Image (cartoon, rainbow, N blue to C red; front, side):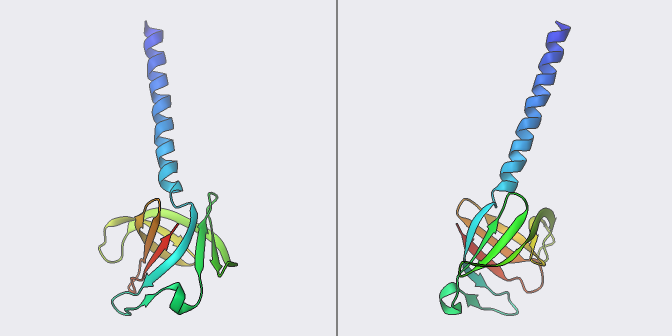
Length: 133
């Protein structure tokens, strides 16, 4: 009976760890995809709206499973660098958020779902950039 009870506990702990790791991978993996730039909205010190048509080019970024972000301008690769997702404080509200750092800047992940990615520059300018899948 003691061996059966011990086996049950080991099995329970093992399945719990698998569940926790799978949840982490799903949360971190949700950004992994190709994102097409839809628009950027300037912060309060520099209000503007930029979209591909008036700017004159299309932009897309691809976040890979191995921690790389590849940036394309009109389907030509212009940058290939690393990215890092971590918890940290937002510049404007000093609350904890998911932050993503790439290409030398840190952004607050404001919205991330199956179709939308909105990042806000984690600095005084507060530029908001919206991507779609």
